Length: 211
Ligand SMILES: Cc1cc2nc3c(=O)[nH]c(=O)nc-3n(C[C@H](O)[C@H](O)[C@H](O)COP(=O)(O)O)c2cc1C
Image (tube, rainbow, N blue to C red):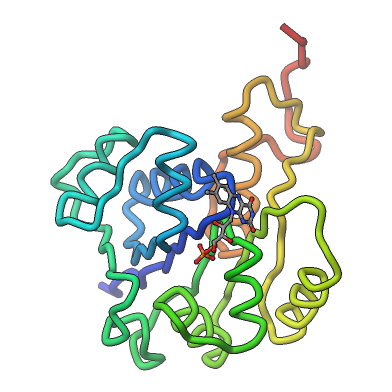
């Protein structure tokens, strides 16, 4: 049987840690192997937004699993050290389905647009670009300055799929989770991963009622 290639999921220090966490939860639920990388700022944001403490000990993944109600025996997620340039995903010869950066900070966006490789997020992303594997970045900043806009254009021209965390409303979300799932689902679409996290256009949808 063909072994399922892993997806690289990186979370960086933009607001909206819940997007990346929800994606991780979904990928685990469908048994999709995940290579996870967290920037230092992502860890800080998780603490600010969810009181989720992810220290740099071996318990880090356990804390995330606990937060997401994932069985702590789960073996499909590998958490990498941010500065481990010898990690599997730092080499193009290690095959993956591609990479998602969710959320992507303006800082990481700038680093990628200029080919920097100061941590494993940058390195794994530039590997995906050179290997012509899908790289989806979901930028969260408001408003965008010219530097961010130029960096997004540069990355798009280099082959990345550039998105921002902007949920639609045509699927009639009822909860914040509905909106999060819309963004996560559309990113999964870009990675060619079937999902039914949100109601698609013209799919039967319940009437939205403000509560
Ligand atoms: C609570 C919090 C929220 C933040 N939100 C954003 C954001 O939405 N977008 C952004 O580009 N940076 C945001 N930042 C700043 C980044 O974390 C910071 O620029 C950091 O250097 C990014 O590093 P990284 O790209 O390695 O994760 C936020 C920081 C904190 C602590």
